[in-house]
Length: 179
Image (cartoon, rainbow, N blue to C red; front, side, top):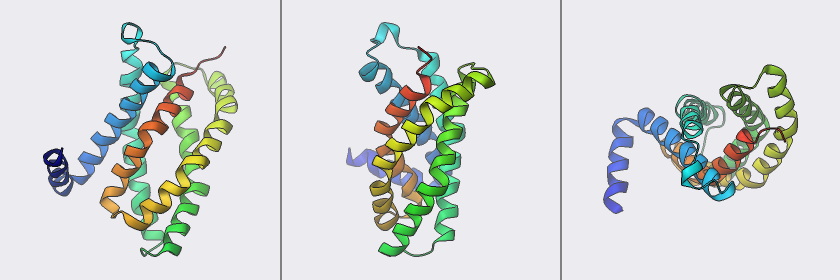
C-alpha cells in the first residue's frame, strides 16, 4: 500500500491535472458501483454498466475539471492557511459553489439519462433540495479540514476520497427515476 501511495505521489507531482481527472472519474464510478450494489441491491447480474460508464464520464469531464479549477480559484480568492482563511474558503465553497455544482451535476446526469428538459426540471425540483441538505451535513467539516491541513494539489484527491460515499448517494439520487 505504501508503494502505491508513493507511485501516486510521483504521478501527482509529474502530471497533477491528469491524475486528478482520472482519480475523479474512477471515484465517481466507484460511487455508482457502491450505489448500485449496496444501496439499490441490484446484484452483479443486474448491474447497469452503461450507467456506471456515464457516471465515470461525468467524473472525468465535469467533476474533475470543475472542482479542480474551482479549488485553484478559491485558493486565489482567499489566500493563506490560517483557521480564518479555511472558514472563509468553506463558506464561499458551500454558499456559492456547492449549490451551482449540485444543480449542474443533477442536470447533466438527467440529460445523459435521456430525460427531456421538462422531466429534468421536475426531477431537479424533487431531488435538488435533499441533495443540498445532505451536502451541508457532510461537506463543511471536510472542507474546513481540507483547506486548513491539505496542500492545494492534494485537495481534489481528498475531496474525491471522502466523495466516494457522497458519490454513492449522489449517483443514487441522480439515477432515481420517477415512481
